[in-house]
Each structure stands twice: as structure tokens, then as C-alpha cells.
Image (cartoon, rainbow, N blue to C red; front, side, top):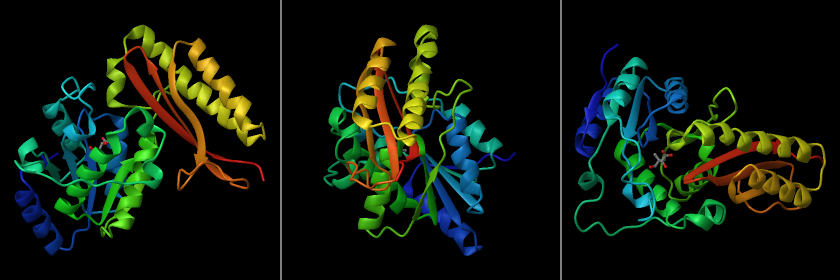
Amino acid sequence: MSAPQVHPTISALREHLAAARAKGARIAMVPTMGALHEGHLSLVRAAREHAEHVVVSIFVNPTQFAPTEDFDAYPRDEQSDLDKLAAEGVESVFMPGRAEMYPEGFATSVSVGGPAEGLESASRPHFFAGVSLVVTKLLLAALPDVAIFGEKDYQQLCVIRRFVRDLNIPVQVLGGETVREPDGLAMSSRNRYLDTATRATAARLPEVLFDTARRLEAGAPPAPLLDQAIAALAASGFNVDYLELREADTLAPLASGTRSARLLVAARLGTTRLIDNVALTLPA
Ligand code: PAF
């Protein structure tokens, strides 16, 4: 197990990747905010299937947090992250400081409509502007052949696919399947905010989500079923931000005749906000 090369600057990263490319390596990137768990490591393993050189970025991006959110408290565990990436045989880690990504006088934004509208944006209106900006910068810094993002953040994945397409960024974007705890809870760096009692309750979220999806696939009418599911989550102590059925690729509201759909949920348990989603095929 050899340690990955850690690059704090875009120029050092580019130099290292250019040398790898010159030797014929394909490059796959996994952008992260650190606090790595099995979900991230599954993306790293998926990246390996596409490339000889895997680069992981670790940057807790301030522009995707509102002032009231958990930027300062967000878990940071750099040594443990680097050990995990070394064990996966990752070649490069891009770990820039804030000034490298947003130097004095930074004045550019990336604004995405379409799939960025509604859902997360309703309660986190700043979020996709921050994600789109930082991911654009990360992709342009590394220009990998492939970049992989987790499906747990499904709306984020759709937004990234859209601006990569719209801006002609020459990178193939792939989604990686959500990794779950044995009781079904989707892995997330924020799960560590849950105490023993809320952690036990948190498993109700995927339970209700999957149960609702199964009933929708069996032909139950969506509106009353979604209301029932929201009530069931509220009865377990969740504050539901949304539980919505959308068209799978565009995230547009369902048109009649849509078969390929996604059911997405966000709910707060105490001060912890959890999100999850599931793919489903609606009956013809
Ligand atoms: O999903 C995340 O961890 C972040 O939103 C991302 C894509 C790394 C951008 O900061």
C-alpha cells in the first residue's frame, strides 16, 4: 500500500496528471468533502474500473453551505481519509485550501436551472450554485476522463450531468449506487451527527421510502400515498422537507405516461437533515 501523492495546488495536480496521461493512463476523479465512509470508497472502486489513475479531491466547499448550516462543524478527518485512500491504491489526492479554490477577488458563478429547481433548492437555495461552481472548478482542474458521484445525492448528480453537458466539459459523468447500513440507512458523513436514539429512528426513512416505491410500482395512486408516507414519517419524529415523485432523468414533475421515475425524500431528525431516493418503474 503506497501513499497517494497529495496536491494542494491546481498546478501541482495538473503536472502530476499530465505525467500520468503521457504514460497512457486514463484518469478517473471522485470529488468529495472528506470524512470518507464506505459509500465514498465504493465510488473509488468504481473509478478504478474506468482508469489506471484515480484522483480523489477532498475540499469542504464553503460556497455550498448557507451561513446557518454546518460548515464549521462538518466532520474533517484528513489523516484517516488519506489512510483509507492509500488502502484503496489511489494515486492522487487533490486537497486545496480555500484560497486556492476561491482566491481574493473571485467573482464568478455557475447557475443551473432545470434539475436544480425545487426539491433541495426549496430549503437550501444556495446549494446547487455552490456545488455547480466547485464541481466545475474541480473538473476543469483535473480534466479527468470520467468523474463519479454518488446516487445518494441524486438531484446533485442530475444537476452535474446537466451543466457538464450544457458547458461541454469533456468528462463522462457516472453515478455510483448508494451504499447502505445493514438497517437500510444510506451512508452519509452527516450520519455521525445522530445520537443512539435518533440513529435507531433514522432507519424509518429508507423503510418508508422503499415501501412507498413498492406500492407506487404496484399501481397505487401517488397523491394519497405520498401524503400517508409523510404522515408516517412525521409520526416517527421526522420533519419532512419533501417526499416527491419525479421523472428520473430530468427531475421534471411526472408527466402522464412516465414510467421511469425517482422518489426523493429529505427530512430532519432533530438537527440532522437526511436525504435519500430510490429508482422505480411505474406501471404502464
Ligand atoms: O457530494 C459532495 O460531497 C459534494 O457536494 C461535492 C460533489 C464533492 C462538491 O463539493
